[in-house]
Image (cartoon, helix red, strand yellow):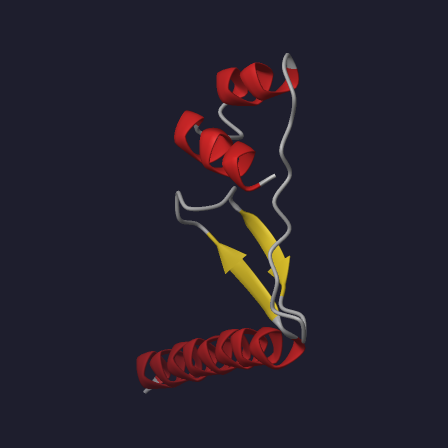
Length: 85
């Protein structure tokens, strides 16, 4: 009988943890927080705004080369941003 109580407690804790994680995920969505893990932008936490614009920073040399060397920017994205600026 004691093993059954332990299993029920573990199941309840797992369910509670799942609900807390889903609530936190939903709360971040309502607040406009976005976690980017793709290669399209630097990995990080972004805040969605009403304007919807994404700010593109166009570094001049030697900073563009430094960003590429450090891996915070890819060569293609720096070249694309330079054409837009």
